Image (spheres, helix red, strand yellow):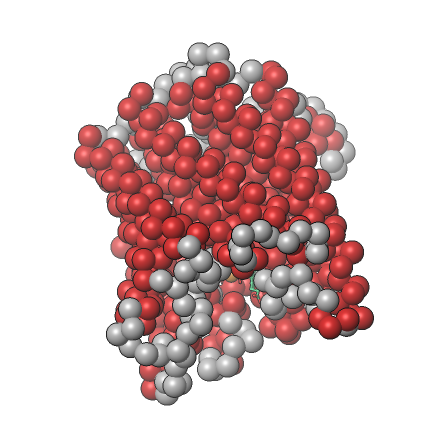
Length: 545
Ligand code: HAS
Ligand code: CU
């Protein structure tokens, strides 16, 4: 039982480099978030000519794009190492190279945002226009992530070569699915940045086709949110069961759901453009249907987690419909944080179904409801799982152990997050239904009565945001303790077995030719005509702002 798999020191340094960047991002991005809620509720005026939209850009880019990508590349690399074995010198060099390219790109983009030359929000699509260095920086972040993904995929491929005929370790398979999905989707954003935005920003062309640019962005942008989600699912399927002392419900089901994510994450981006002109309603309909297809693997995940928890509860003898809840380890931060994440994903996912339903989208689009939606999904379900993961991954990588005191602090941190986010996201959802816009600074809208009703909820958002900021300070304290001060020792990277471990594997889930052909075919079905129409009948294009 006491299988001891230590991480190679060199690999440990590589993983920690990613974690350091992630924690610095958390501090900067979290501070920007706090300032936003204070400005938006009319309690603070920003000094020194700093603009609301400038800090909103910092907040979105540094948290949603930079923190996530660094954490994910670090975690996935660690997962591949844990299940396939340590990296070869070439593979390690690739992941390091990817890390540095991403970091240089981040520095370039961040400099432009700080100089107020790239206040274009985290979605940075046209007609908002940034300095060319910003675009080059963002392109480098993407290219760096490809290089890192290549290193991870090579380790997985090497394992498969050395174990012909065997199914690969689940975590390595999942990381590879996410990497392949990421590479295929980020071609879209790379295309609009290189072919449209850079020439436009350099002044080589005067106008940009906004429709095409936004469509290419969202081809990437929806899959982006699954690129964040899948590492959390990796932990839910393959790590959390081990932490609670159970076996995962099914290895085959987990692989099947990841295969469906590869197929359906990309051909759905138009559900972000349901209110946009220039896209035929038939293709909006097709992509909404595909969006509901991508909900299925999430429902499979929910089923599988409940089954894991309940089966374990029954095994240790609990009765009744919900008796299993008592058997879960409520005093273990490695479990409590991801669990709060799962619970948050139930309303978060339900809100997604509302957004994806074309009629209801008319009500919520561009309101702060959407902001509420993604603070439950990425900023709770995903990030709390990432924090819970960090709390064993950092000591695993640095050769230290979590102590009782740090564990207690970590649980307090998770609970405060849950409280702060419930207040903030709850207020956002509610007042969004009454029309409060997203992405807008404090305004009384010329004494409008409707706008006056929004103010108390904006104050609630500031209260929630303040609690969240205190929680972030706790994350930083826990991080520093675990990275530098916790006692030396061995902390495991938990990897669970599945109940159907011995069952025959489905060969097709790992037949990469088949996977890639289906993925590309679905993308062609969903996008050929709508993008083709943009070329046949191009709008005059925008000069940019
Ligand atoms: Fe979304 C907008 C639709 C999931 C993030 N989404 C956004 C934006 C972001 C985002 C960042 O169709 C804003 C983009 C922008 O800036 O403009 N979203 C969906 C749908 C899903 C969905 C259908 N979104 C996510 C995830 C995100 C994310 C995941 C980040 C990680 N979203 C939309 C749409 C828009 C949108 C439209 C555009 C809106 C507009 O008009 O602009 C689905 O994938 C959701 C499926 C999930 C479920 C829940 C399953 C539950 C599970 C938990 C089980 C827990 C257990 C334990 C077992 C159906 C797996 C609990 C036990 C207890 C006892 C409690
Ligand atoms: Cu989406």
